[in-house]
Every structure is written in C-alpha cells, then in structure tokens.
Length: 155
Image (cartoon, rainbow, N blue to C red; front, top):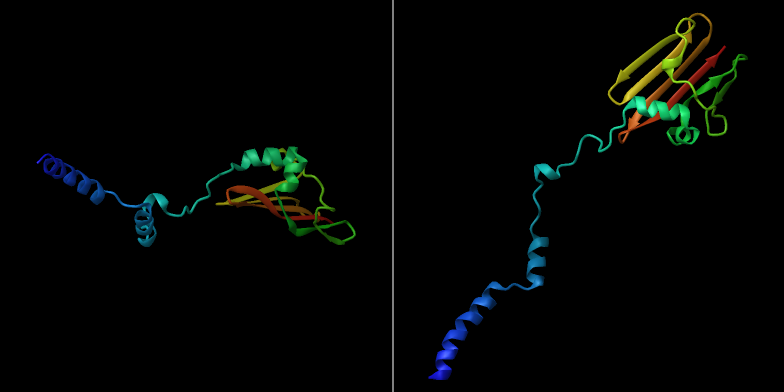
C-alpha cells in the first residue's frame, strides 16, 4: 500500500505539470500563424517624427557652410543669370555661400516677399523695374528643411 498511496499522490502532480507545459516550438508556431491586428498605437505616422523649426534651421543654414551644403538638394532647380544674360545652373562647384537671412535684407532698397505653406517656404527679393530678383524655395523633407530651388537674376 505504501507504493500505491505514493503513486496516487504523484500521478496527479505529474499530469498537472505536463498538461500546462507547452514546448517553445508550439508557442512559436502559434505566434507566427496568427496575423497581428494593427492597433491604434502601431498605426503608421502621417507626420514626420522630427520637426525642425524654420528659424533655427535658417540661423544655422546662413552661418555654417558645411551644414548649408548638406541641406541643399543638388542639383538645385534654378539658375544664376549674370548681367550679360548668361544662365548658369547651380551645382556644388558653382554654389556661393548664402550668409544673409532674408530678415536682414534692407527693405528700404529691396522688396521682400515671403510665402509660407505647410512644409514650404518661398523667399523672394527684388528691386522693381531693375532686373534684379532672387527666389529661394525651401521644403521640409522628413521633418528637416532643405533648399530645393534658387533663382538669381542680376540683369
């Protein structure tokens, strides 16, 4: 009876442990077979993860030449027109560092026009009736500002 009473006590314990235990293969198979539902927390973001304010970008763009080159999308749309009327496209070799933000332009001599839309800023400087005009287009790409177009007419 001694063996029989031990067997009666041990058998339920063994059955309990074996019925609750799953192998790692069984768990892995179940995890991979069931498709995961997309929860609101996992939805793809429609807005960039990083947002760069234009004013801080502009300050660094006009003071740091290496940063400026990194933040220009070459080949830049636009051109340089010299007083003889010759157009030259912009590339890294013909690029001239921009040192003065539009906020520092002398508005008693030059007209300044700024157009802003979400993710786009257009800056124009001109002298009416003179043939002088510059136009810069900045666009936000993945939350960071880049110069994408520059026209400089000096006729």
